[in-house]
Image (cartoon, rainbow over all chains, first blue to last red; front, top):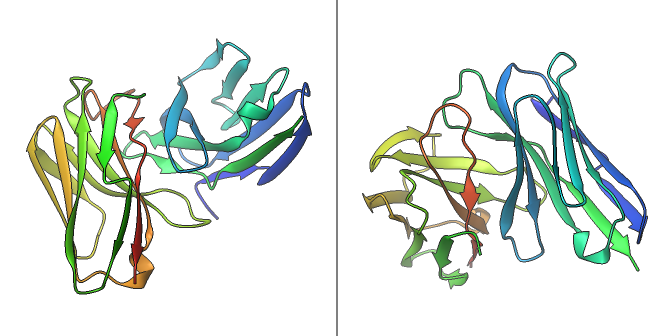
Length: 110
Length: 114
């Protein structure tokens, strides 16, 4: 079992739909990251969370430390949101290392 | 544009070639990372450099040799690679290597080993 599990692995939505991607982890962490990877490989860091909730534009990320769970929400989804979304955690003892989930492939159709 | 650039963006090499990947960060960070992303697998951390000193090496084969001449530049020297080394190689940087830090990634070099 991976230390970081994401669901779903693949998600197809219609433009305008509300989207949720989930991440569960099994270790104590100091931070959790949500990353976005576009076709071609480039990765952009979306959020870094240690508690609570963060919002940036149409993106919202939440984390529940007690339940070891985080969600990434996209409101009013758009085809340009199509990408792979990756959850990564920094464990309490791993120093600078991030442990990554396998990613969620999101496709938003017009 | 994330402030981290990588060259080349694409590379095809034979198993007997020697090549180098280059990463440059313009963010004033003091830690840099090499990651490997193979198809349908999570990102794998290969090397971490902090203040130009290698601090982590996750049992990467010796055919991959990193070099960090200063805090802004990071190289990955490649020699006698295998076809299974074909992957996307990503560079990242951060300010500091402990605590709550965000890593900023470059666009990656897509490598094909024939």
